[in-house]
Every structure is written in structure tokens, then in C-alpha cells.
Image 1 (cartoon, rainbow, N blue to C red):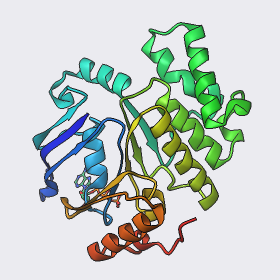
Image 2: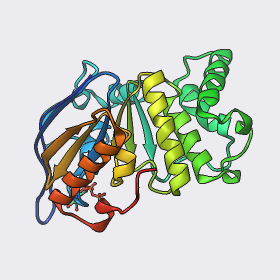
Image 3: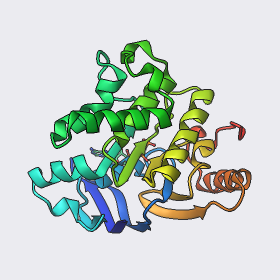
Length: 256
Ligand SMILES: Nc1ncnc2c1ncn2[C@@H]1O[C@H](COP(=O)(O)OP(=O)(O)OP(=O)(O)O)[C@@H](O)[C@H]1O
């Protein structure tokens, strides 16, 4: 469903900086893939290219049979609205709107759904996310975990082909982190949403099916989950320590 083919990205400026160099990989339909690497290794650059916010300097990205960077602005906006969902660490919800209003927003902007269709989808998704009871609460009344559940709801409301998440648990305490990771895992399995997630946290990435490690803008390693999350976690920590990087990459958090 996603093919990244020899992608390089050079930021121009006083001094040109090559943030990605010849990165290639495939992601299968329904796969849950984590992207890890030291600070400054190019993870966000890669995610921005896949989210079509940014373009590669060379190479191509093919997503669900299309090459988004070849589309014009209008086609690209429609591609993004139909096929992609986004979850960020700082939530990016509208604070004074309710949970339901935030969730339904992408569908109302799309304009092709009846009110009863939208209502059905919100309720069905809210049940899965465990936020049915707070649908009428405003965002500023919620906890961090509840806000991130709402953000996931908004990102999945239109059944995107690919969910892109950049440090989705970065602002959550460990309990809310576990909660959100179990939820993303469940949504990946039940809605067959393909997920690509950038994280520094090996506990968080141990929920994925596969991890891609990036170092200095290049693919460094790849790990598949075996039968046990515990050994997957140990292997992830081992690769991170081989890569070096900052302390955040080698968090001493124990697997819950
Ligand atoms: N707009 C830009 N212009 C110039 N250089 C940039 C720009 N955006 C990122 N960079 C540089 O590209 C490199 C990769 O940055 P990127 O944000 O992709 O790394 P990252 O792995 O996501 O880091 P972190 O984990 O700290 O968020 C860094 O050296 C960064 O300084």
C-alpha cells in the first residue's frame, strides 16, 4: 500500500543539509510500522514526505496506487482528506468545540456525508475508543489521555488508508501512554488501518509489527516482532544502543 523508493531530501539554505539519503521500504496493507532513530536522524522529515506536507528532492512515494507528489494542489488536498489520518503529540484539536464536533469535522469539511451517516460513524468509533460518555464534553475539560483518544477518533473518522502518527504519546503519562497504545493496536487490528508511527520510546514501539531504524538520514536496521512483545522490546533497545543517540532513545522505562 506504501512504497518509498530511493527517497532523498536535501534542505536548501545557506548550507544545504541532506536529511534523507536513498531511503527505500514497503509497507503492506494493515501493517503497523514504527520509525525510530536518534534525534535529528530524519524521522519527521520522512513522515512529512509521506504525509505530503513536504516533497522529496529525489525518489518517489507511492501510496494506495497513486504518487501524491505528482498531484496538483487541489487533487492533493482531496487525496490527503480521503486517504490520510494524522495524530500528533500536541493533539491539534479545537479546544472550545466538543469531542463529537472535533471528531466529525473532517466529514463535514468533506461535505459528501448525510447527518445520520456522520452520527452513526461517530457513535460506532466513540464506542471503540471508549469516549461515548464524553462526546458532549469540550476539549478543555478532558485529561491528556481522553484528548488523545479524541484525536485518534478524528484521525480515523473517514477510514483513512494510512494513519501517520508523530510521537502520539509524547505528552502523556505512562498510564495514558499504555492506554493509547493499546487503542492504536486495537484500531489497527479491527479497522485494518495501516499505521506508521514515529516514536523515541521502545515501550511504545514494541506494540508495532515492525520497526524501521533511521540513522543519519539512512535506513540502519529493521526489526520484526516475533511471538513475544517482551523480546521484541529487548531487541529494540539493543538496536537503539548500537545506534547511539540521545538519552531519550535509551529510556529506562520497563515494559508494563
Ligand atoms: N526545514 C528545515 N530546514 C533545514 N534543515 C532542516 C529542516 N527540517 C529539519 N532539518 C534538519 O534535518 C535533520 C533531520 O531533522 P528531522 O526533524 O527529520 O529529525 P528527527 O529524526 O525527526 O529528529 P527529532 O527526533 O529530534 O524530532 C536535522 O538535522 C534538522 O536540523
